Structure formats: structure tokens, C-alpha cells
Amino acid sequence: MDISRSEEIFAHARQLVPGGVNSPVRAFSSVGGTPRFIERASGPFLYDVDGNEYVDLICSWGPMLLGHAHSEVIHAVGAAVAHGTSFGAPTEVEAKLAEAIIERTPVDQVRMVNSGTEATMTVIRLARGITGRDLIVKFAGCYHGHVDSLLVAAGSGVATLHGGEPSSPGVTAGTTADTLVVDYNDRAGLEAVFAEHGDRIAAVMAEASPGNMGVVPPSVVDGENFNAFCKRVCHAHGALFISDEVMTGFRVTRSGQFGLDGVEPDLMTFGKVMGGGFPAAAFGGRAEYMAHLSPVGGVYQAGTLAGNPVATTAGLKTLQLADDAVYERVDRAAEIVRGETGRALEEAGVPHVINSNGSMFSVFFTDQPVTDFASAQTTDTKRYAAFFHAMLDAGVHLPPSAFETWFCSSTHHDSVLDRITSALPAAARAAAAVN
Ligand SMILES: *Cc1c(COP(=O)(O)O)cnc(C)c1O
Image (cartoon, rainbow, N blue to C red):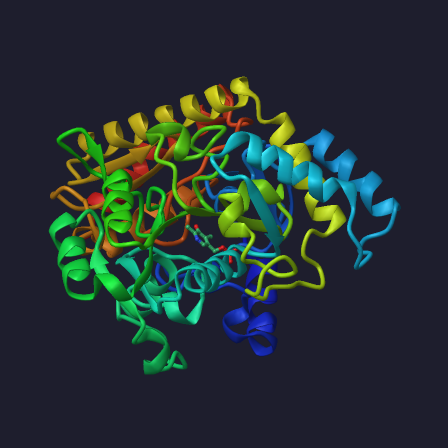
């Protein structure tokens, strides 16, 4: 495919913006080559500035559950824009979106913010405010946005850029000193940390089902899911269990990961799908906990554009349109892509592991089970790069990193999936050719 305009714009953008992008993974650093500059999108397709069409398996990293430019979402957004774009005063649509979230999840109240990062940052402040304790436990490979105190052993973009180094320059030792890191699915590890520091731990924060080191689902041991285990250990020590559902929320089921494992966290974070493609996120929990937040309580949080009327309209319309049929279509599309990818890699003799949790899935180029960050990192990133570029050349846009979740939408119909299926054998052979 000719991508001369993308190349031109990338060269120009790199002079103006670090790496030419506003979020690192978009730069193709780990797969090489030139990112496609996107002009527009429709349903399951992205169109770049050179006029190329791609089947989109990024879906904006999750939000576009209904596909791009869904006519009813666009119509609702257009109507909202015409009424003014920001007031700095409350609107009814914010309450309606809060109600839609509360109705689907085990939270009594929510507060809206602009990004998942803000949601996790604030929920940690809230957990510390509620418990009067300082320490936070996170899991290696879980990404909770670029919050300083959580940028320790964070997955995906960070793994891609720093090869898994524990933090970013600019994050002070003082900040991360209050963050304890345990391997994901490591029950003994979590118990050990609590045995040593239990009375100082405010909260354990986990991705509800990690997707930011690739998909690594919570393990089940003796019938107990890892989230249930975390909650049990937290409560035994007076700590809170925070489930970060920014990625899983309203995607893996109508009620997110909670809809799969039924574990009720003390506090939760949401983002991605609930913004309908706009900057919107939220955190929530039991009313008694949320009462610690200003203006009711003393834990401060605010936002000029928080609960923005256009963003909340897009989010509300998206949640309203996401009915059972939508989830069935997304699940089915994911199942087909997973199955066909596995088959093609099998036929080409490429060692691989495909992990999935509902419609979230990812492909690891490794021959060992992937249950935590260390095993995720055994994936052969050179093979992934070859596979990625062969798919891209055939018009299928995968995430440009080996440590990401692949996402489908309800518009990934059979004819679209056929295009993925026919692109796979050559891509699998390209991966096989890398040693
Ligand atoms: C995407 C993501 C975030 C960060 O959200 P942003 O809107 O990018 O700040 C936090 N937690 C999880 C689990 C995510 O997937």
C-alpha cells in the first residue's frame, strides 16, 4: 500500500510533537515503520490519509464497542454540540450517565472525570483518605494510566518502551515508595506483602482482568477467582479492594468483569466504552465511601471539563445502544478472529498462546502459558512485528505492540471477518520466517 501522505505527515509531526504522537504506542516504535495517519473511520474500518482502508482491531483501544461513527451516537453528539459544549455547571445528562453506570455495576455513586488516569489517580487518593493509610499494592504488568504512584511495573506501552523497567524517569522515589508491587495471580506474594505491611495498606488495585500486558485473566484456584481472593485478603486487613474496569467495563459484558466473576469491589474505575469515543471516565463505590469526596467529604477532586455534556451524551448513548445483541456480536467476532488466528499460526508452525477473557483477547508468540507479566514477556516481539506488518499490508490494523489486547466491535460482521481470515496465512508465514 502507498502511504506517502502518512510518511510526510509523520516527518512533520515529529518536529512538532515528541515522536509525532500524543500517546506513545501509536508511534509504531516496537513494530517499526510509519504509523497510519487516520482521516476518518466508519463501522469496523479505518481510512488513512492515503485513502487506504483497514479493518480495525484496535477500536480506539476499546471504546468503540459499537464501531466507528455509529449514526445514533453521532446524531446525539451533534444535538448536544448544538446546545453548547461546556457550561461549568451541572447538567441532567451527567446524572443519567451516572444512573446507567450504577444500574450496570455494583457501585452506589460515581464521579465523572476526563480520563482513566484521572479516575485511578483519584480513587487512590480516596482510598487513602478513607483508610488513613498510605500504601497501595499493584500488580506487575497492570497499567492504570500514567499516575506517578502507579507507574511502577506497568504493562503495555511502558513495557514496549522500556522493556519492563519498573518506572519512568521523572517519577520520584518518594512517590513509588508507597507502592508495593506483587506478581499478578500470585496469591502467596499478596499474602506475604500483607503479612509484612497489612496495617499500612490502604488498598489493592487490580485491573479487573488485565489487558495491558496482553490479556492475562484472573486465575481460579479451588473455585476462587483472583479478584475474590484479593478482596478477601484486603478485608481481613482493613484495606479496600479497587477494581480498575477502565478497559473491561461495559465491554466484556454489559456489567464488565463484574458480570463475569460477580466480585463486588469496594471502589471501581471506568473509562473507555463509557465515553463513547470522547474523553470521559468515572470512579465509584459504596455511598459511604463516596461520601468522603468533596463537596460532601474532605477528599478533594475537581475538573473544568469533568462530566462534559458532549462526552457524557456520547457515553450515555453508547451504553443505551449496547444491548444483548451487541455483546453477542462482539463476542462472536472475537471468537472467530481468535480461532482463525490460532489456526493460521498452527498451520505455519508458529508457537503461540492465545489468552482471552470474554471478547478481549491477545496473541502471544511464545510456547509457555501466560499467567503474569514475566510469562507475557516471553513473547517474541520480532515475530509479532513481522506478523503485524503483514496484516497491515493486507489491510488489517492490529495494535502496534505485542503486549496489547485486540478489540472487535459489533460492526465486525462476517464479510469483515473474512478479510481478516484471508490475510492471516501470509502473516503467519511472515512470523514463521523470523528466527
Ligand atoms: C486505558 C486504561 C487506563 C487509562 O485510561 P486513560 O483514559 O488512557 O487515561 C487505566 N486503566 C486501565 C485498565 C486502562 O486500560
